Image 1 (cartoon, protein in one colour):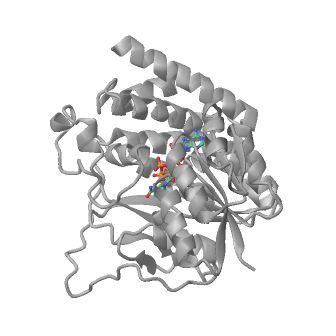
Image 2 (spheres, rainbow, N blue to C red):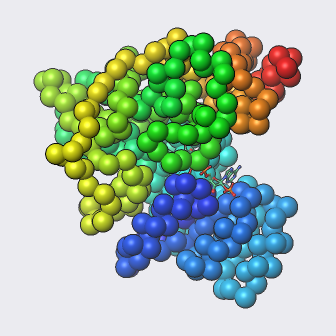
Length: 385
Ligand code: NDP
């Protein structure tokens, strides 16, 4: 029996690579649900090619366009954020790949967990915002969360077969395009410069988060919830070559790491096939010609977003949700030329100071904290411009 996969965000960087994996292993997997936000033409093309049972266009103003374009196909077309939560609960779905970006991933991920689905989790914002609630719920519902983020997949792979406690997680970071820039040079960074990641070809939002290193901060939070390790035991190490995808140090001092050519199809495929590994024709490491592998400490003065994420994790409660919301606002504003590179951490830090703090938030509290933090960050941006 083929496994039926719901891909939330099939038109994005992770989503399209997941479809490549499904195509390569079409004897094992089928795309049962495809979803997009606004890229209708790509969604329609994917639907015609992969013949899912259902598609969802999240932006409901585009519903009629998609419905009409697929009228000759045996495909059900839905629209809106609620539809994302409904399709993942379909009895036929085995695996839900959360490859949509931002806070929008939280509700459908919770819905999928409530329906006991296996989660292939790319949408890190879900665990940043609601890590405690989501991991608790996944345990109660016996829904496995398999990491797709390459670092977390590497940690997961390093833990395969281990029974012992983790002493420390070594979370590697490429350092992004501005690793060697001075603080002064960062003042003049443009969106075009920040959108050029040295090693990975990803969606726009995560590429900017990588340039500020907020992405690494989010991954620290994600690692805490996925692997139950406190912030003090997660060490970020800058490794510009992105060959070692992350590592785990055990109580006897032994370190296990996972290495490979940077290619997101490897962790995507493993999240589908676990506990087995499937054959692939992806590039292999070329050991005789591999450049030097180097390691550095991150510069927290230059990359203040990383320390803000650590601070939010230590404070807990609604604070990571506040940081995520403020970050989504400044990230978009930066891409649209309404905020400078160094203003991003400044607005996030000020939003953290102004937001109401709840130590043990419910899911509803998190939705309110998200809305409030967005409003504060927007006001701060407006008052600074
Ligand atoms: P992209 O921006 O490339 O794709 C995002 C997808 O989500 C698109 O299909 C988009 O639709 C859809 N989408 C956007 N907003 C909404 C919304 N409000 N409601 C429903 N769907 C929406 O992102 P990536 O693929 O780069 O990243 C996806 C997630 O995976 C992120 O959380 C990211 O942090 C994580 N991740 C990504 C990695 C990568 O290599 N790209 C690596 C590790 C983690 P549309 O195309 O119509 O806009």
